[in-house]
Amino acid sequence: MVEKEKKKYFTNDRKQKFKITFYFLLELFKIIIASVLLLSVIQDCDGERCMLNDKFNNGDTSTYIVLVVNVLNIFFFLLMYGFELSREHFIINHFDINKELPDNYITHIIDNYSSIKSKFLIHNINYLLVVYILIFISLINWVISGLYIFNNYYNFTTAITFITNILLIITKLYDSYYTATTSNKKKYALSAYIKVHINFNTIDSDFIYKSDSFIENIENNDNYIDISDSEKNFNEYMVEDHDVYGTLSINREDLMNFN
Image 1: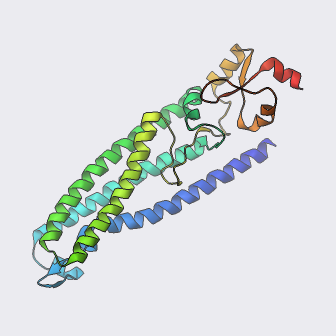
Image 2 (image 1 turned 90 degrees about the horizontal axis):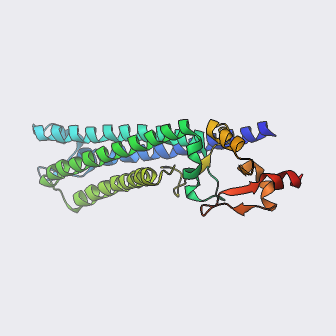
Image 3 (image 1 turned 45 degrees about the vertical axis):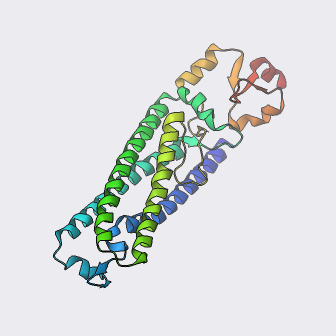
């Protein structure tokens, strides 16, 4: 039975990672196109629509400056994606989704898993910092690219393509900013890819009950034990809300009498 459960969760983890990889590749393509504003936005070259070679054969050094800023923006996006994916794989490997538990349930049990908690908090902090840096770099890219592009304004399609690309970037930045700030503030394990935002709110079955502090608490308390998701068949018998966060509890003596 235990082996079947492990196989089940392993399969779920693989499905989640596959889904995240698909979303990442789809996002990455759109972000790269939207970041290279010099090439993706329609511009004017001597009264005609610029072709690619026209932009680099005009002898204007500012063209290369804009291109460098565009590439720099892509680099920091890739850096952010690196931290984002690393965090995402960590929470998939160490946490699970239980819709029957409240979103903040993980904050009340993670102290029993000190090693997981410390790594999880580091992932959240690093993710938030790189998101802040990316927002700053993106603002610089928009300003420098905007000055160059509107100096070579072609027609209304110039403004439309410029605004559309920026809105695409803003959507991703806001999504990452929300995930990073909320996860840091509330100590949540919000997913940045599985939509609508999914909060991994409990410990993965591969790690549950392996915590030394958890085992010590059980040994030192004869009247109280926590119930894992795999033991919910006991919930129909004398289960009570232990606190406002919905932690399930059952008296040990009643559990013995249940048999």
